[in-house]
Length: 455
Ligand code: TRP
Image 1 (cartoon, rainbow, N blue to C red):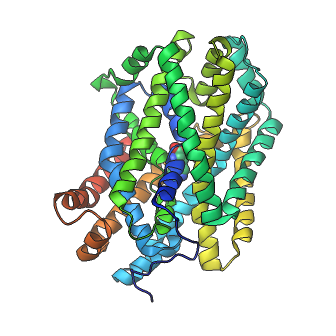
Image 2 (image 1 turned 135 degrees about the horizontal axis):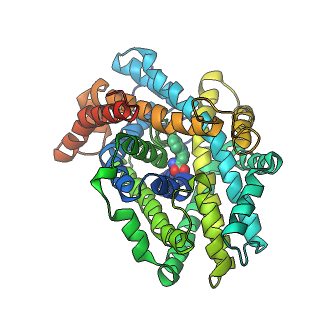
Image 3 (image 1 turned 30 degrees about the vertical axis):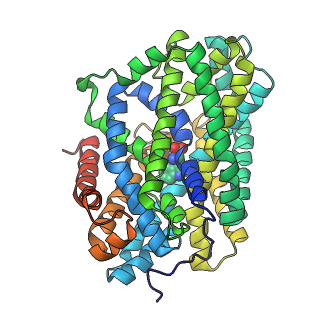
C-alpha cells in the first residue's frame, strides 16, 4: 500500500494552480446560480431564503469544501477509491467508501436533469441569435417557453446535444479535457458576467433587486425554507457528492487548499447574488411573479431582452454565459463516475465516458417527459424531475456532507490532518476542525430533521 504522500494520480494532475481554480469554479458556478437560485429565492420568500443560504455557505459549505479537497488530495483517486484507500490507511472500516457510492449516485441523478435544463439554455441561445425575442410581452414569453417544454422531441434533441458536449470534454481527460476547457471558458464567463452587470447597473433598477433580496423578515424562516436554502448551498457549491473531492485528487501537493476553497466559494456566491440583484428588478418591472418556478429566468428575462436597448446582444451574451456555466458544471458531475470506472474496473477512459453518458442520457428522459406528457405522473405530489431535484439537494448531498465532515474531523489522525489542511496549527486550523467536527454534522442533521418535519 502506498502512503499518503504518494503524489501522482493515474488520471493526471492540474498543471497550474489556476487550472484547479478554473475547474472548481466551473463546477460550482452553474445553473444552480443562474437558474435555480433566483427561482428558489422567488418561491421561498426572498430575503429570508437568501440569509439562510448565505449562513449555510459560510458555516457549512466552506468547511465541507475544504474537507473534500483535503480527502481527495490525500486519496488521489475516484471518490469511491479515495475513501477506501484512506479508510485502509487510517485503520477504519472500508464501508466509508459509501461516501463515494452515494456521491456517484447523486451525481448521475443530478446530471440527468442538469443536461435537460442546460438544453433549454442552448435552445434559448439559438433563439437569441435569431433575435426571436424582439418585442416579446408576457404572453409571448410564456408561450415561447411552453412551446419548448411541451415538446418532448425538442427537449430530447437539446438534451442529447448537451450529453455529447459533456462527454466530449470528459473523454479528452483531465488535462486536455477539463483543464483546457475550463481555462478558456471560465475567464470568458466572467468577462460576459461583467458586461452584463455593467449593463444592468446602467439600465436596471438595482435598488429594487437589493431590497427584495436583503430586506428580510424573520417570520419567513420556516424549517422548510431552511432545508431548501441549505440544499441550495450544497448544490450551488457542488459539495457533498465527490465532485470537488475528485478535482482535489488532481491537485498538486504544494497548492494551498484554504485559499483555493475560499476563491471558489466567493466566486460562487458573487455570481448567485449578482444574478438575483440583476434579475428581480426585471421581474417586478414586467409585473411577473417571482415565484414562477423553474421557468422564471426563461420567461422573464426574454421580455426585457426583447425591449431594452441592445437587448439582442445582451440576450446572446446572457445565454452564452449560462450555457458555459452549465457545461463546466455538468462535466464535474460526470468525472467521479468516469474516474471510478477507470480506477476500479480498469476501463479505458473512452469506454467509461461513453457508457456513463449513455446511462445519463436514458435517465434524462425521465426529466424530458416531466415537463410535458409525464408532468402528472407523480408520486406523493412530485413528478420525476421534482423527485430527482428534491432527493439530491435536500437529502443526498447533505448526508454526503455530514459523512465527509465526520470522516475528515474524527477519522483522520490529527497530525495527518494538520499536515494536509494547509492551515498551520493555530486558531484557523482549530476553528475549521471545530466546524467539521461539531457544527457541520449537528447543524446539517438538525436542519434535515426539521425540514422533514420529524422534530
Ligand atoms: N454547482 C453546480 C451548479 O450550481 C451544479 C453541480 C456541479 C453540482 N457539480 C455538482 C451540484 C456536484 C452538486 C454536486 O449549477
